[in-house]
Image 1 (cartoon, rainbow, N blue to C red):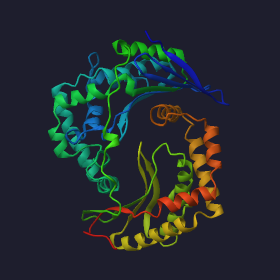
Image 2 (image 1 turned 90 degrees about the vertical axis):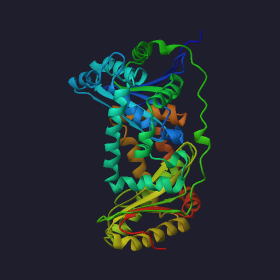
Image 3 (image 1 turned 135 degrees about the vertical axis):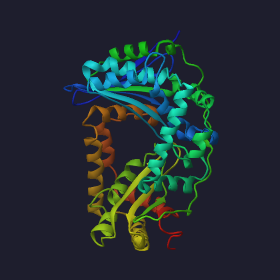
Length: 432
């Protein structure tokens, strides 16, 4: 019979220690013990998201996230949330394209409660037919609320325009039509297929003892602690339509403001050039001193909100620019954005921009680790998504090692691609 395997992954200068134990069922338990704190953040991360759905299952991963809070074999919906809130804690979940997370944040005295509750929710959802019908209406309301916010909806429109009908192009929430078509049996089948220990990582950070967390998790998993079954074969992440380079997606809406996303080339999540891209993004549109912000808002007053961003997945990615402006300013905004990007693609960053970009990225990495929740997310993503967990010092060193030539080469490759556009506003087409 196989045994649990434990190893120390990191020992920080601040006394923090990261350890990982892999149980016989394939479940990975990762903790970061942080001296001097009184809080604990605990999360169960499942390696399944909306891109793992078939077209008939569109919206199932997010629907399931909602349903698991409706009750388990031993807890009602009220008994799931009330005890956590009674001790001042927080319990929540979220679904992305490639993973789902259920988490709780509590004081250290309530660690056992957090672990028991989160694991019970993830492992023993009752998925009652009446709950499914009731929650279907809640999610339809969520879709309607999202549709009322074009600043969010334009990103879904971009993904649909760029990735088409493939798994990445479909909305995480699903659609009214797909939600109506989801059956109780279909959701239960999705749950049984994907929510298996070998596809999960549980992580805890803060005032935790690794061995105690492992034992509490082992007890909470109960019968699920049996040796692992063969891994579910996943094909959706290796078979999606080619991105729609140069496509334009327009949604006519009689709004006071136009919302525009322009997408260019990108890299997969684990690409070694991600630090160079992070520096490039910070200098291009990552803050108020960035080139896009200065050119569009500060110098010309054409928009209130303008920024660039990087979106990376297991096998693909894109670099995006978002602008919200008056509809009659869209042409000017597009022209200036093109000019800025073309200049960066041709000449790279100036020395002072490189320094600011490195400093901005370095600061966001370090400051992002100032609370237990951020630390928990980092160690969980390192295990589930990246397959490595470099120390903060190592990450900072990688950022500082980014050169102007690294950025220039990457900019020439990514920023010269034909852009894909998504726009929402009172128009039917975009300027050429």
